[in-house]
Amino acid sequence: MALLVIGLVYAAPAAAKVVGKAILTSGDAVITRDDVTRSLLDGDLVENGDLVRSSDNGRLKIVLEDGSVLSLGPNSLLRVSEVHIVNDPPARYVGLDMIVGFLRIFASKSGNRSRFDVTTRHAVTAIRGTEFGLSVDASATKVLVFEGNVLVCRKFFLQNATLVLSAGDQATATKNTLSTKERWTEDTASQFPPLGEIALQVPIRPAEEPEGVGAIANYKFATCRRNDGQFDDLQLRSRDTSGRGSRETSGGGAGEKAPDPIPQ
Image 1 (cartoon, one colour):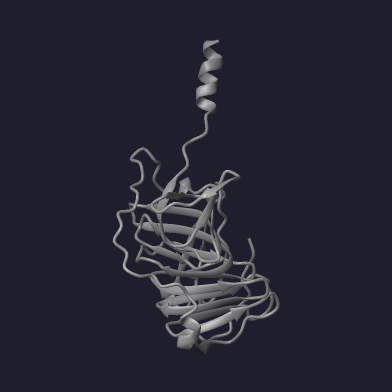
Image 2: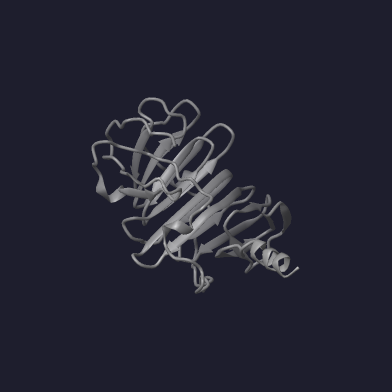
């Protein structure tokens, strides 16, 4: 009996990781966690794996523990798949899945070994220390860059499927194409939810939580690989947590043709 009790104790699931806090700015939203959907309330904590949906009049922000901000527009659906912050050396590993709607992101500065990727049904965007927006529907993903640089990779691995965008640039990815860079207009930018003033103390990770990249267990970062090693400001490094060693990926030069992304 004692052994059975001990076994039950050790079989209990670990507590989910809190990674940020929600600010409901207007309307309504719901959150789905462990297959249970409920109303999202202002100030609710957000955990890895949460699926957040805004209503047709809903707007909300999610402030991550490193100060990054996710601003979700109406009728939008986002999964916070993986957020992991490493203190020493400083690094951030963020993987988001934007399913439909409008999302605007401010990504705080972080260490050179960081990842901040947003995946949609058409593209993967990989960024560091920047502000940008995505609009996603069934036919296309549009990416606008407000500040910094964004590496866009089309998910379907055909020729010339990688593009680097800078402030003022936009591009559109579909199942079959990735457009050339264009300059966005104020009318287009106005469709994206504002970030606004953020003054919120985000949750602090429990002291007993393990440090290091090895704590990333459930999210597989996509790869946008260039072989020429150019454009170091977008260098991306990810570590394989399965025990098979490490891998590195690098962003390429703006405006140049790039090799196809390598699927993983």
